[in-house]
Length: 113
Image 1 (cartoon, rainbow, N blue to C red):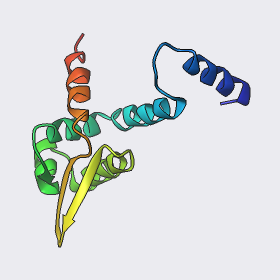
Image 2 (image 1 turned 135 degrees about the vertical axis):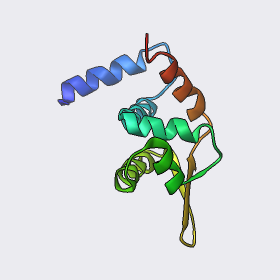
Image 3 (image 1 turned 90 degrees about the vertical axis):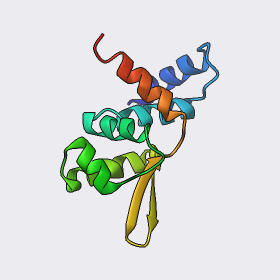
Image 4 (image 1 turned 120 degrees about the horizontal axis):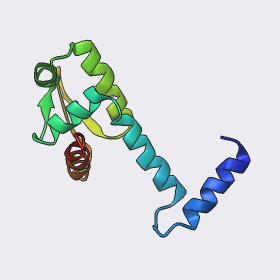
C-alpha cells in the first residue's frame, strides 16, 4: 500500500466510532486471513467442540492427509489461532483463545445466507 493510502486508512480508522487501534485491526485481519481457507476453518470449528485433539484425530475428522493438515495447522499456529502442545512424541492442538468460538459460530451461521 502506498504511504498516502496507508495514512488515509489510518486516519479513517482513528476517526471511526470504534475504540480499536490500527494494530488491533491488523491483528484481526491476520486472524480472518488465517481462517480464510475452508480446511483451516473446518479444523478450527472442530477444535471449538473439544478441549484439545491429537493430530491424527484432526486428520480423521476432516478427511485430509496428515501433510495437508500439518501445513494448515502451521498457518493457524503462526496466526495464534491454535496452540500446539507437545509431550514427548504426543502432539495435540487446542484453540489459543476461547473468544474464537463465537467468531467461528457466527461465520458458519451466515455461510448459506
